Length: 99
Image (cartoon, rainbow, N blue to C red; front, side):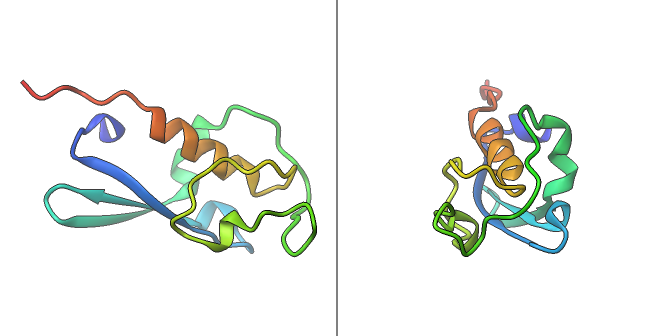
């Protein structure tokens, strides 16, 4: 499976505030390739609440989505938070060992 590849690393996320599922998860592979995959392709990994409304530009928003290399989970109860949760799942995904 894609996420099990030990040569693959999640390096960033480019948000699309208008269509969150069209934001891009950015992966580097050891073969010197960078892949951009729609966040919506990983929506089935989402394991949490769905919040309504975006908190961007409020005191509650730490602005993680504005920095593509920032991959920490977001503490805000914002509609964008589901992608941050998916990022955490991807980062913890077990990798196949190379024999």
